[in-house]
Length: 400
Image (tube, rainbow, N blue to C red):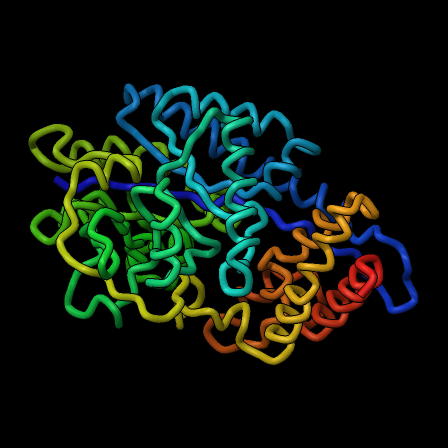
């Protein structure tokens, strides 16, 4: 049996307005652009994809199962500009075939700079998931699947989570397959589900590539690839951005038709109906025991060809911006606690969103087009200058 485990990342940052050294006000966000982008993505992806998945869950008697990590910054924007999308996710949650994954509320790299802030953001996210969906997550994933042994130790110390999602990196796996459950060194009770990046990327990135030898990708073909896991694994972890459906892969590519028939093809690929199935992450780790240790001594991620932190911390601008940002943590929290500025902590937290560092990336070659696609700036340098101008204003408000 091979169990398909779908995990979707749903995230929207609060993009900053153009902010100069001459500005002196605490209104940092380009909410005209934020609203327009959220509404566009809701129309192209969030509504049709969630409605389709809800239909698939019902059509297949809840045998089709999925999981989501939805950041608080995305949920806040949905509540403001597309509340019906929240209602769709609530309907999906009510089926029991959908699992919500714990994470940082603001999609931050806080674990690298402040364990206290990391814990605070995880707690905020848990609270929001509980309030909106009645969810109490038992699976964790860090921002952009950033992960290391140290993260596993910290997460395990909280005693809340039974599993973590992370990237399956060839150099760390060696000859082994990502299609098994693993555990971190010294933590046999904490299970790891590793992204199968080849099959995930076949959908997320290659689906509409007419130069790809497998184009056009048919659900029957993909189901056969999943079935080939039998004998060398038990889980097929398909982890991807939710915007794959309708936004990155446009409706005209046939992505929704592919999704519509994929469950039945997965179920029917073997003579015995249902031999292959879909499971939520918590079900995967409950059913399949770990086969060994996944040792990750350095931080990895699911980004770019390097699968490391270079998308966010690969140049001096990025490391300087992050360092200066977290230097303000104590002063910002003191100002918030004193009641002198009730909005400063949330403003600071919105700046911890990793997208702001991503926009400063100067990588080109294989991944440059991806970075440029997501950035609202003309150049990484414009992003850095704008971010630092905003940060200087936060510093002034904090009295530093």
